[in-house]
Length: 251
Ligand SMILES: [Zn+2]
Image 1 (cartoon, rainbow, N blue to C red):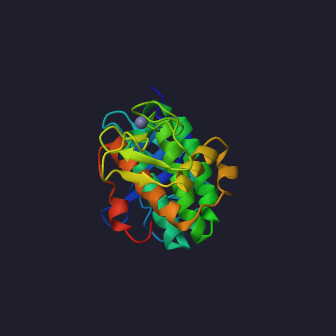
Image 2: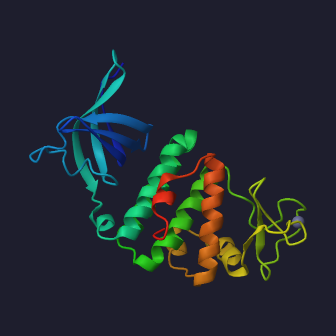
Image 3: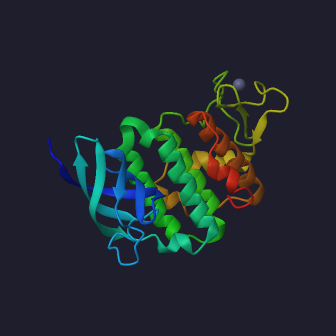
């Protein structure tokens, strides 16, 4: 049984314990979610003080106490800072939303390495993203997140009758099955995904994130896209996300 080990991880969440300690939720590339204590990390002079802040990517040195089954952080080396995320409310809320989705999905289950790579690549783009690009980037991250969970709906065919979705009419969302469906199968009042939003998804999810990030979409399509994506993610996770509630008007 190895008690000391090193892993590359992102800090997803911190909680204050007592006056000076931090309990961290880490997302490790090779181990998934880990809860670990950073003793003294709130002290001004602590070496862990800044590296243990949310969204920092770090090489983390851990000790596992086999008796209590607890993890303790012995050191952290910064690999990428998160300073850019703190300079914009939009960016910070988006990163918080992504982190909450990772936690609520238990780190993406067995696909945690793929989810880790997606999260770190997305955070890197978000770091210097202009505010107007934050929402499309967030939709990209969340759709790719659904794909990793195996919960992304078919974007080309109606999920009920299998006919090809008409990219001039857009699609509808079936709330029960969380599928994209055609106009003939949609019930009255179904959420509509406008043509621009459907075409955007069909086009961008086939290319690497970096390239998709450069594709824009108009305001109205973006609004409907956000609504649909947030719905799909919360349905897949079977829970409402706190950050979406607290970030109304920002996200
Ligand atoms: Zn149909």
